[in-house]
Picture 1 (tube, rainbow, N blue to C red):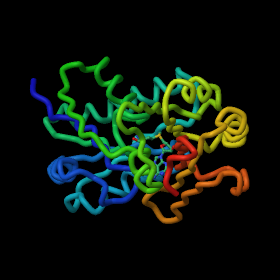
Picture 2 (picture 1 turned 135 degrees about the horizontal axis):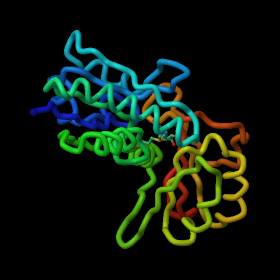
Picture 3 (picture 1 turned 90 degrees about the horizontal axis):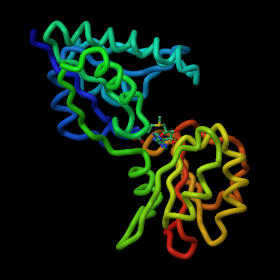
Picture 4 (picture 1 turned 90 degrees about the vertical axis):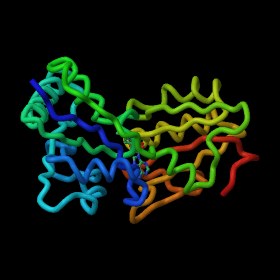
Length: 240
Ligand SMILES: C[S@@+](CC[C@H](N)C(=O)[O-])C[C@H]1O[C@@H](n2cnc3c(N)ncnc32)[C@H](O)[C@@H]1O
């Protein structure tokens, strides 16, 4: 039996020009495009970013991703999503799954890929990397992430600030994604830990309403947009 190929495509963090030529070339020849959305609405930023690059008439199908930590609910949703993708691939048609930033970095594509691997390991899967949110954020804020022998660590703030201390102690810079839900706790922890450091908040990078806050002390600690990240570096070194 022959199959189509599933392409996991990173579309960059928001600016439609930050997508690779390879991604655009593949998007122009696939039969179906899939994108993740919350099960509560039909919005998909990844879908909006690629819309200008698709051939006319190519269907874009949203795969519902429930906003829950219940593993059984998530597993069931991803099995249903994987089956929808497999129905296309099984007809020898190529399909793309588009995802914000890079598919290998905190992306729903990972869940889809693992589920497809479990269900149908013979399906060909190719991945096109994308510019991550933090690469675009570092460029927008003019903050190098690492130079010479330096290191940087990327962590998630989705569960709060508990990973911050370890990350700050073991690397020169820290990037924290998903900061919005526990923003106040993260700020309080930063104030305790990050003496001599500088934290910059980048929100909606490359999108309308982009915000770059170099001085968090002067920014009211209101919850930032969901699309927000922090870059924590050295006080005396960073641009601004
Ligand atoms: C589920 S993760 C997706 C990460 C993505 N795959 C990447 O490569 O950057 C969502 C988080 O990425 C960050 N993010 C994505 N796009 C962003 C943007 N345009 N501006 C700022 N942060 C962004 C935010 O921290 C957000 O909470």
